[in-house]
Image (tube, helix red, strand yellow):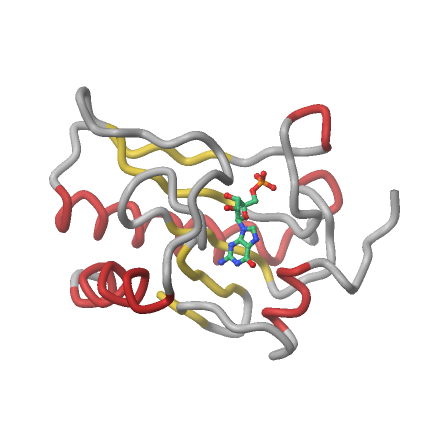
Length: 138
Ligand code: 5GP
C-alpha cells in the first residue's frame, strides 16, 4: 500500500484537522491520542510521509526517539505509573489503523483502567488538561 495523503495524521500535519499538541519541532509532532488508552496517551509522528517504520528516512530516527523519551519521562513525573509503554504498529495485520507512522506512549500500572485500543473518544478540553500537565514537565 502506498502513502495516502488523506489519512487523519496527514491532515493534522498540514493543518486540515485539529489536535491537542504536546511537542513540535522541524522533525516531529507529538499530540494527544483522541481515544486514550490511559490518561496522557500521547502519539509521536514524524513530519515525513511514511506509513510505517520500514520506510522512515534515518534523519528522523533521533528526533523521534528524543521526543519519545522526553514525553515518556514527563508522563512518569505526572502520573507516577510503574511502567510506560511505547508501542508502534506496522500494517493492518499488526493492528495499525492510521497509516502514517506513529509511536504510542502510554502509562501502565497494575490496577490502572487500561482501555481497549481506539475505544472511547475524549473531548479536546479533557485532552488539553492532560497535555498541559505533560507539557509542564517536559
Ligand atoms: P494505530 O492503531 O494505528 O496504532 O493507532 C492509531 C491511534 O490513533 C489510535 O490510538 C486512535 O485512538 C488514534 N486516533 C485515531 N483518529 C485520531 C484523530 O483524529 N486524532 C487523534 N489525536 N488521534 C486519533
